[in-house]
Image (tube, rainbow, N blue to C red):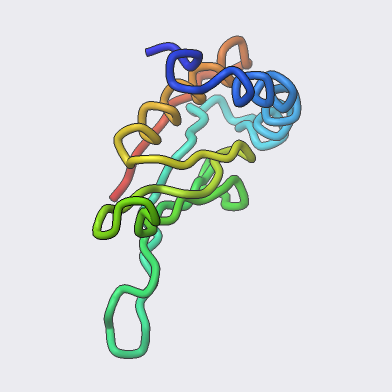
Length: 126
């Protein structure tokens, strides 16, 4: 699915403005050992002292290093009882249903890694 079908015009304009910055960050983090470069969205659940989930979401790793964003599961203020993803991936803000955000992340990955040196793959780990 095309990124332009998933994002509105203003959001697409912001993406084009930040694409070079995002790509520069990925290039700095790229492997030099010939292995595949990975962008991984990994489960990042936090628990309180009673063992209950206090925060649920995903952290974004590039070649297993953090600092590339996170998505948090929050209750939708407009639809109580329903949950959405809120946060950023590779410095790009995203929010919406988890299914929509997953599609946006996949399209964003294809958009920013296009023409980068080396092999890049997107992984989802729960």
